[in-house]
Image (cartoon, rainbow, N blue to C red; front, side, top):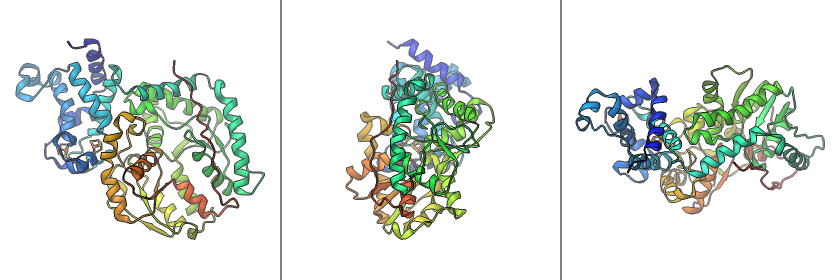
Length: 439
Ligand code: SF4
Ligand code: SF4
């Protein structure tokens, strides 16, 4: 027996999201199959279910039942289908575990069919129907709770940052080095991720170039995006937008993280329907500016190993940031090699779309990462750099699973090494994530 409430909620999301790009994706597909080889799931395991067009077809069948003339009266003629709970569950499973929203299929489709947009809509339908992975719901709600009453964790956060400031001073050999939190009037508001590793190396770089910066109390990650839930994604982004407005900063700079950058820089202005009184960009772009402006003293011989770079899908394909990482790598490394393909055509690592947070799909995730493993092996690299936390987590897991024997690093870590700071030893700090349990 179908759960009508769940199905009705899911269909309401579909109807609400039927804008022009989604309608185009639902109506235009030449069934040429070119997208198959574009998808890392298909490359890793070539079967019909892994063809992007086949995935999109599941939603098209539901759409045709209501929006196509023949679909309404002769559904069998055009493969139109009523949505039921079993179909919804199967669609949700595919959208959450067999599509990382990497957009490589869209880039390679002659018609520009936006399959990841359809997958996001399915995620949104599943979320509305109560069929989204619980952990994503929990992470999104926890971030929203944190924004409701920042005073609950602010003092603890400031205290932890105070400890980190001491480590920064040792690292850069300067007792005047500072990490300020939410300082009004700073030029840059830096939004890090949960964990000292995304704060300390950028802090050392900001110190070296004498940047006028301050730290956000929020993390840049946005799990509402992974849920396909625009309302929740907007609430999560709003915390940072309001913070930046109150502090009157010139720009908001997002940590090395693909989806965080794409959601805040590209999606948030649409969600809010306004132009913000500050610029927003990825820290990768800011680092590249520092390098090009000669504001950093860098010694590439500090990174003599063979280093390759994995382009995050959200940074390269969604945000167009693929030249900037190379500006940095060519300045900080002696032996930088490209993987094939790379840049806009790079294969997804298999960890995007929130998959690294979902242990129930670990096996699928490891399988989907196989093309990336082969790409890396062909470079002969000892180090793989990535400007995205999700990618780094996935690459680390792939490294262990496939015994690649490589080291995974962020761009900021390579820059800091090339800066040859007084403290040669990396400082290890515990995570400073302050989780606020969802109600
Ligand atoms: S490449 Fe585009 S048009 Fe061709 S089957 Fe795939 S989605 Fe359809
Ligand atoms: S967005 Fe990426 S993972 Fe999803 S179907 Fe397209 S190529 Fe495959």
